[in-house]
Length: 215
Ligand code: DX5
Ligand code: ZN
Image 1 (cartoon, rainbow, N blue to C red):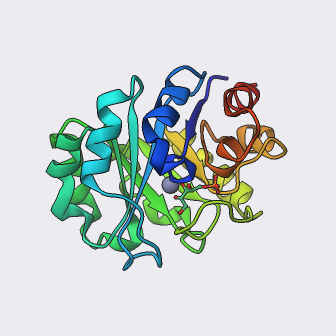
Image 2: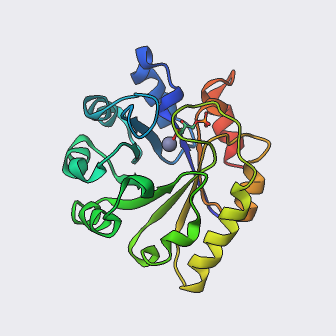
């Protein structure tokens, strides 16, 4: 089964961002995972549009942009212009999720929906046909390097069953606490995109760690 690895730029060295972008370019990674935090939806502030534009100038792989912000619908065109290829919004921040998904697709990006650890995958049943990716948060969003939440496996299996029931080829992305010890279990449960921040960037040899995550 083929799957994607998306190193999370949140754990990169922001003073050497071009170096770290080029490291990912030259690795077996598939996407760049870029975390945008507003200090309101989550208790942390990370990076915004100018930094994404700068990453885009050097990146040779798609940018998977994860918005942890309130009212994400206000900025869809801006993230497209900055270089996002996949744009993911949180269900908890989107009262008009169906409309927001439509706007992402009208802007020629893949549409993703992220779920906090407490949010049941069932809530996606009525939009599953409309989206490309579901990001299952396996930590509470806001910070890199947190401990993986074990209930994630059950969520992956339930979501995979929902997708199979309608014959949909869904991207099932796991974000938070992915390690060399648990990545195979996540793939076995049905995940096909793995985000990895701390595991990649705190390792002695990030290129080799990405290689190992690719199996
Ligand atoms: C957390 C972010 C993650 C984070 C994952 O809020 O959405 O993408 O970078 O980091 P690790 O892999 O270190 O848990
Ligand atoms: Zn993320």
